[in-house]
Amino acid sequence: MMAIVPWIGLSLLAAVALPAAAQASVQAADRGAIAAQAQTAWFAGDDAALARVAASATGLATSSKAQDRYTQAFVQFRVLQRAIGAKRDKDAERTGAACIAATEAAVKADPKFAEAFALQSACYGYLANLGGLGAIRNGSRSGKAIEAALALEPGHPRVQLVDGFGLYFRPAFVGGDKGKACARFRAAAAAFDAAGPGGAGGAGGIEWGAAEAHFWVGRCAREAGDAAAAQRSFERSLRLAPGYVAAQRALGR
Image (cartoon, rainbow, N blue to C red; front, side, top):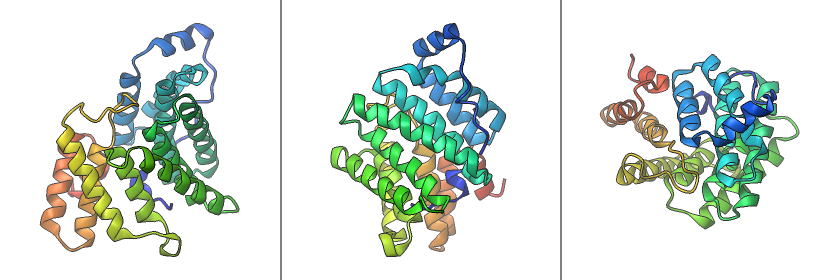
């Protein structure tokens, strides 16, 4: 799975150890709040804020709970996106490895955790985007992880969204198909809308992906030459996430 900037960098603070007391407080913290902070920082392209969230979430790495490790992986995923977008390959490699390790722990704790498999697929996909000797291996592992997610929850909007990313960025000779990808984005956006605010938390217990799904529906519409449909989708994305810089730019704001 290949990737581009809107799946978008920064140096890792997530590997910095916190004092034991701080780690304990993170363990007890609300996962939703941690994820929301990471999401807000990512939407805004605020690397400093995202770094602070990553540092605050390091205590989750000591947890044996699937949801804790999924939240940790999600934060690392957002840092990974930013690192890829900024072409900080070494940071991307470290963050990608942290994301994958966290998702491995999550699916070990809960083998039916479809969202964790999907997030793992996304992290492997970004690492494949770095190229080099590991590109084929990481691309293959990305494919296997999304297959596992689809086998468990094929209709989950985040599973559909990540499947769409893979189809969109993967070269055609290894199964990439932008037409199918755009169909996945539309299905994901419709599923998020049907679930309503807070309705797509799933096993992970955190909300993410709705604004991105609509953004990518807009990208597909724009590429198909339907400017009006693209604008509607970008505006919908921005209503869901008013600080989403990529959607603002797509609308010329």
